[in-house]
Length: 326
Image (tube, rainbow, N blue to C red):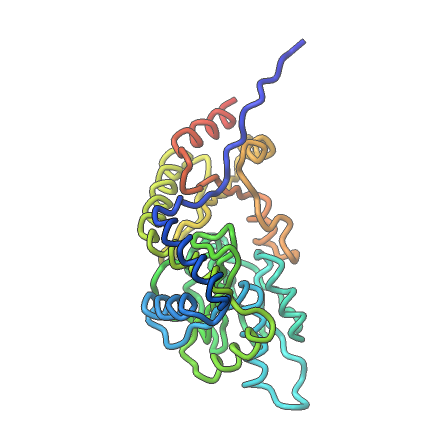
């Protein structure tokens, strides 16, 4: 009888332990004591911190990235459509998370599906629509937002890298698995007062960010540089060890290395994908949300590698290579 050795799965993600947890506990105690669970000092401090980090005029927090995206879509309609106008359409990449088209449908938009670039995995934004979205795929900043006037940047995966505001608004997620987490939360960044006012109306009705989420985000932001450095080290190590077996996502501007991902054309490597996924690698957006050619290829030929903050990435790489060479 052949005995199969069962090895522990490599953890995919993970956040750093906050050194100032005592301060966070004190903050939580104050929130509970005063009973102001939203619209308090922590939320105000987070807004000013993010304004400074991104040099933007308006920051509107919410309870999630999906609520933030919905609020921007509703705000755009209020500011741009008149009674009797035809139903608007929004251009969305097929290689993305399903919440984006879901909230677009909820907001009354027709979906115009778009394919992605072969190398960057960003939306091509070529199909005609009333409004456009582009996505910072896996944390890589999209550089195509100037193609159209009305563009919303789905930046839900790229929080933490200062840059000029792109499009009419950028939408961030602070969900549990993100680089910087509020537990749950979202942000809208814009330089338009009218848009900010309309977004805030929706977030106040549907999902405010609690004080506790703001406090958690602020604590993680204190170690942002450390997180970015660790993520970069992990990414560079994978690239050194796994190329040319894998071709890594091309980064046109910069990235927070939220997720390290690469494709392979080798049948030998592709045949190992089930074992690598069992080991701890992942494959997102497969199948894509629509049958666009490049989206189908990237979805089926790419892998995302474990890159949590506490990961022993040399050990992880060795185990990945062990599977590939077996």
